[in-house]
Image (cartoon, rainbow, N blue to C red):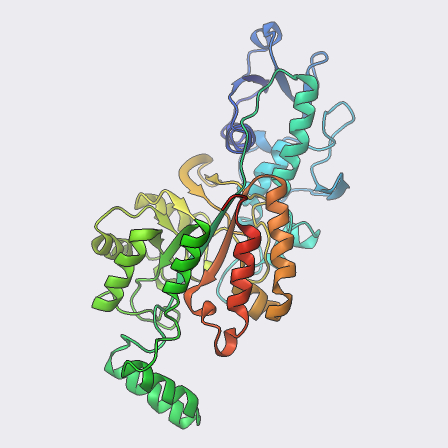
Length: 437
C-alpha cells in the first residue's frame, strides 16, 4: 500500500489515482489531505502537490485535477524517453511532467468536450486529437508512462509489490449484416436482383441465385471459420450484434428472422455477445432500450456489453444512455479513420463524466485497430496490413495490456473487395495470441 498526499481530494484526483494505481498497477493506495498523518506515515508514500515535504517521492501537480469545468488547456508536447509527454513540471518532480493530469486528460477524453470539427458521421475524428497531431496515437502512452513511473516507485520503495500483469488478446467481431443474400425479405431480394441487372453485375446476380437456392454458401457466413480458429487457438471471442430498425446506416437482418435468431443463439453458446447499438439509436434512448431488449429476448440473459455502430460516440450522452440501461462494458473507444489508442490506453478503465465530475460504473475497453481502417481509410492492401497489426500488437505486448481487434464477419470471406484479408486475419491471430495458446 502507498499513501498519497494531495492538498485537496477532488473527484478528478481520485479518478486519476484510481486509473494508475488500481486499473493499471492493481495495487492499493490511500489518499489523504491530512499533512500531519502523512508525515507520520513510515511506509511508501507519494506527495502530489506544488512542493515536496522532504525526500519522499514527489510528483508536481500541474493543477488540472484541482480545477472544475472544461476550459482550453495550454499543452506543450515534448519527447520523453521512448514516447511523448505533456504538462511539464519542475526539476524536483520524480517525472518531468504531471503524469496524473496528463493521464486524466486522455482517459476522460477532455479534448472531445472542447469545440472541434466533427466528421461526416458527426464523430470526433482521429485527426482532431492531440495524439494524432503530435504523433503518439499509435502508442498506449498512459501505459508507457505508468511503466516508467513504476520504476521510480520501486527505486524509492523496493518493498512495494506489484501484481504480475499478463497480456491478453480479444478478437471482437461486429455483425452489421449477418448475411449478404439470405433473410433479406421479398422487397430487398427483388431489389438486389434488379440492381444487379441494371448494373450488368451478372456475377452478383448468379451468386445471389445460388445462395438463395442452397447451391452455394452465403458469402457473409464466415462463422464456422471463426469457430475453428477459436477452438484451435483457445481465443477470447466477442460478438456485437446490430438489431436496430432498418435505416440508411442500419441494414442488418430483421430480429424476427428464425435463421438470424438461431445464429445469435449459436454464437452465444461459444462466445460472449453484446449489443451493437444502431446508428439510429444514438441520441434516442428509447430505441437503444428496444435493441437491448431484443438481444436479451433472443439469448435469454442480461446484456451488459456494447459497441456503437459506426463507432459513434457523443460524450457524455452516449455513455450516459448505456449506463441507464445497466450496460457495464463498452468497446467503442477507438477511431475509424486511424488505428491506435484513442485514450492512450490498452487497459480497461472507467468512464469519467466531465460534466458531472464523477467516475461512473461504465468500464471502457479500448480497441486498437479495425480492418476497415486499413482498407477503406488508409488504402492499405492486404499484403501490407500485417506491418500495421504488428506495430500495434508489439506496443500492447510491451506493457502487458489487452489487444482488442475489430473485424466484421463479411471481411473474412476472402471474396471480392475482401480478397486476401482472410489470410490477414489468420496471420493477426497467430501473431496476437498469447504464448501457450
